[in-house]
Image (cartoon, rainbow, N blue to C red; front, side, top):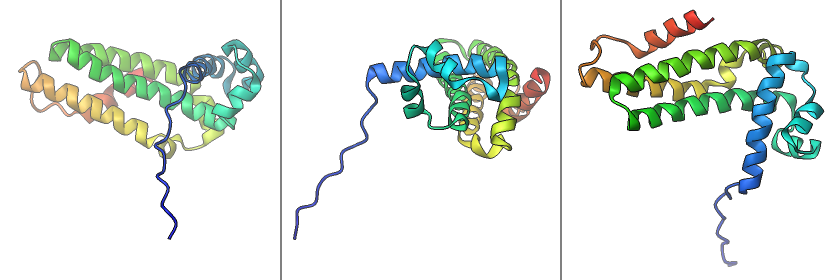
Length: 168
């Protein structure tokens, strides 16, 4: 019986590859905001300081790039909630995060037409990212309730829906 080979854990991307990916996403976010779904991928690669091959290795299709742009924004927003919760009192952390959320929604409005054109119904595609956002607001609201800073009947989902409505 042949010996079983251990499967190696997935390797973490090299730091330069991670930096390239982040630069591509930052440039792509601006390009899709400016030019919509037809933003030039060659221009995005050039502005990010990478070759087209590097862009396509990270994001084989325009749709995957746009999805990654949106997902990256949501991941940063979720991570900010954790950071703020660790650094600030509950009410201040919640307030700071809500301001970041409104800014994020305003920026998302700029890429929304491209998302709709390329992806169709983005709600299915981005469900995992949105789940992280729901969890982030739930934790921040719960901390503020427990500290006595806000009423205990505030529903985090209602709060987010109200903010999305304001930002739209």
